[in-house]
Length: 185
Image 1 (tube, rainbow, N blue to C red):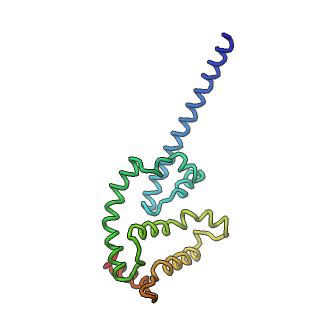
Image 2 (cartoon, rainbow, N blue to C red; image 1 turned 30 degrees about the vertical axis):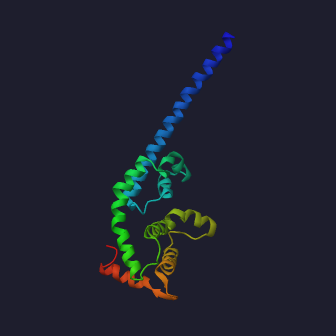
Image 3 (cartoon, helix red, strand yellow; image 1 turned 60 degrees about the horizontal axis):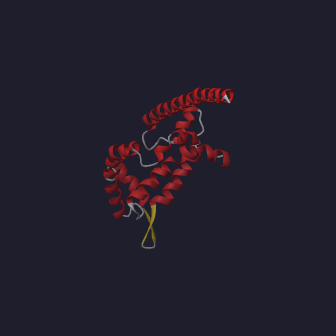
C-alpha cells in the first residue's frame, strides 16, 4: 500500500511539470499571437486585419487563434473596451452618413448597422478567404484580375440598388460624391 501511494505521488509530480510546460507554451503562443495582431492592425488598420493574416504571420492555422483567444469572440472586457473606444466613435460618424446616402438612393435601404457590418465583411473577404478560395477554385486573391472582378461584383450587387421597381445607378454617383468629399467623410 505504501509503495502504491508513493508511486501515485511520483506520477502526480511527473504530470505537474509537464502541465506547467504546456501552460507556458500556451502563454508564449498567446503573446506571439498578440504581437502579430498588433503588427497586423498597425499595418492594415482595424478593418483590414484578419485572423487568417495574423495566423499567417506566425505560420499557424487560423483556428488556433480562436482557440487561444476564445474570449475575443464573446462579450468580454477587451471587446467592450474596443467597442466603446474605437467602434462607437467610428459608428457615430458612419451611421448618419450611411443613412444620408440611403435617403439619396445611393445605397440599398437596410438597417444602417447591418449595412456597415456587411461592408466590413465584404472588404475582408479576399484577405480572409483567399487561401480557401485558392484551394477550392484555383483563384488567387492576390491576382489583380481577381481583385478587380471581386470589386466589380461588390459594386454591382451593393451599389446598384433597386428603387421603386427600377434600377438606380447609385454606385457611380456615390463614388463621384466620395471623391468630391460630400459623402462618407
